[in-house]
Image 1 (cartoon, one colour):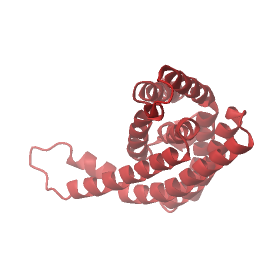
Image 2 (image 1 turned 90 degrees about the vertical axis):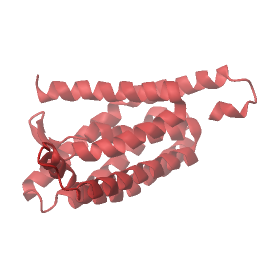
Image 3 (image 1 turned 180 degrees about the vertical axis):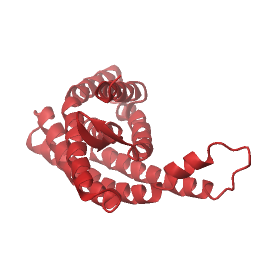
Image 4 (image 1 turned 120 degrees about the vertical axis):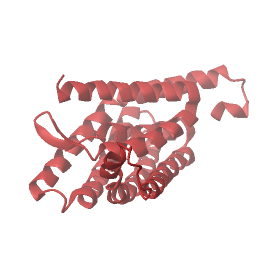
Length: 236
């Protein structure tokens, strides 16, 4: 099975799992998804692959869906809940990094077979985490602000605010993260190729997630309609 095919499968899997999380757990499912995306994307990004003929890294889909999650939170639950999701994501990255660095201090037993693999993955995490936290903090807060701004200006154009906010914030995120995480690690031409292909992948994720946010808004409306009018739990 080619990398291109696996990428499409992973894209559909991420959208499906995020939709399940929102359908059954509402905003709390999105908070959980943001936590997963923040942790797993920073592990996946360590792996470099060839996709559609270009060099890129893993983690683009998982990380991109965290922007979708905050957009859904902003659309259905308001700006404050979206900002809460951003804070949860930042905490998740910091907590994972600190815990795993302490875990690496343990001397492995003679029978251990996984210590070298853990070292290979998580010894890179501090630099990745620093780049990720910096990029995430700036781009996600911009995304929430810009989405809210576009929602006020263009209340009927959900597709417009979803795509414009995500694609713009992803460009900011990709620029900061690529330079901080990979500059000096890979040759310059590889860094710029990673930057370009990673952004294209994130752009595609943002483009393809438009039906998901329309579904999420409709699902949220059905949930509200099912609640007793005036019940404060309707927005929980």
